[in-house]
Each structure stands twice: as structure tokens, then as C-alpha cells.
Length: 309
Image 1 (tube, rainbow, N blue to C red):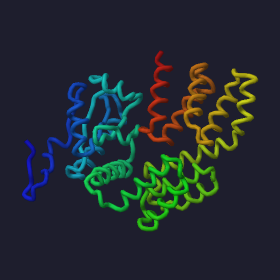
Image 2: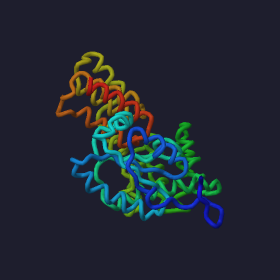
Image 3: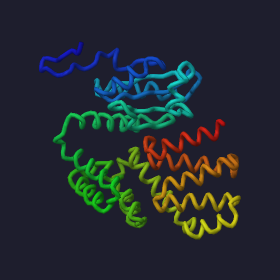
Image 4: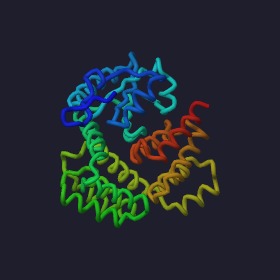
């Protein structure tokens, strides 16, 4: 039975419900169903993991400070291997955020408390926006992202720019503007937009990811053109350095699937090549694309299949 406040709305969950341990069996109810009401953070950890011991208390502190706007579920990967495998958790600590029954954000490693707070603040805004159809900033962000999805970076850039004029510290809009110029192939303008991001937003996850994408684009520009590299690879398919350069060039050209295909091919041929250079580059791509991006999810699955076959 749902408890109601004096005003008729749902009551804030009791403190015991804010933080709980979950198992493979309870995960659907504790996370997927619970996330229909508020965002749920899942902390994958283990007793032997030092960084997990640093991260856990910070997560709990910030979740308690949110006073019911988000919940925290802790999963011991040693005792619950099925769900960890299903979500392709490859290293811990790993933190996933779920809302409306699906993953919406993630990070790995022990972050400083300031970044954890930013992570949770984004989830709180996301959860609040779901019940505020009249939030003009959230509506505008949704329109800009839709424009990007439809291949209209110019339109998206205009919307992101309007958001920044109304809310100069909107990290999502600043990051989106950088990505718009990258999508248009204008690295100079993307760099200018990156440099204009307010210093206090530097650690925001979306800003970090956008700047990572910019760095990859600049790296790819120096690798050469897609056409020339394809010709060189055609003459010698075993030249892994040319294949690696082609992956960078593909990424700069916005052909992300082709980029990860080339890196996965290198891992398939020689996973130890240049101190696992291809696998490490894939990780950079994943961070720039976002952990829940469809290209990232598919590539991670394929990488796991190669590494553990």
C-alpha cells in the first residue's frame, strides 16, 4: 500500500528503504521496479576491493542528503555474479543509475565526493523532470538532443545556445554545444566552446565526456583520411597500426560503428598489440560516447566475447 502525505502525494521512503543490499533474485524489484518512482543507483562492489570501501560511504552520504530523491542499492559481485555479468561489469567499483526501468548513467572507479554529488544531482533533476512537463529548460534540452539524433546539429546548436543564455551554468547545454560542432566537423569551433565552459563545471560528467570526444577528434585528424587509410589497409590487412589509425579517422568522421569495428578487429587479431593499445582506445571511445550509448553497449558486449572466448 502506498503511503500518502498530508497533501496527498507519495511519502518520502523510510530511511531503511533509501539504502539496501540486493541479490540476483531481488534485483528486478529492488532496482527495475523501484526506479519507476525515483532514480536508483546500483553500487557493484566486493569485500576485497579497496576503492569500493572508499566509494561506498561517499555514495551513502550523498544519497541520504538527497532525502528520498534517489535510492541506493548495493550488489556484492562475488555473491551475485549473474546480474553483474548481465550488465557486463568488468571492473569494480562500478556504479549504474536506473530510471524508468532502464540504465541512464554510469561510472567506474572511486570518484571524489564533488563528482559523486554532481552525478546524484543529475539524477535528481532527471527524476524531477519526469513530473514537470512544463519545465522549459528540460523541454529545450530534449528538443536539442532530438535534433542531434535526427542529424541536425545546426538546429541543436541554436537550441543549446539559447539554453546557455538562459542558464549559463547548464553543463548539459555546454557539452551539447561542443558535440554539435564536432558533428559538423568544426574542431576549431568545438575547441572554442570547450574553452568557454565555466571552470566550476569542469568535473561534470557530460563536460568530461564532450572534451574526451574533442580530444579523440583532434587525435583522429592527425591520423590521416579515411580514404587513404582504407587503401593502405587494403594493401596490407595485417598492418595493425594502419587499422588503428583508420579507427581514429572513422571516429573523427562520425562513423563510430566502423571505428569500433576496426579496434575490435585488432583485439581479435592480437589483443596484446602495443600494450593492449586497441582495447585502451576502445575504453576512451566508450567514455566519450557514454556508458549507455547503443554503440558502447554493443561494443562492450563484443569485446567481452573476444576477451573471454
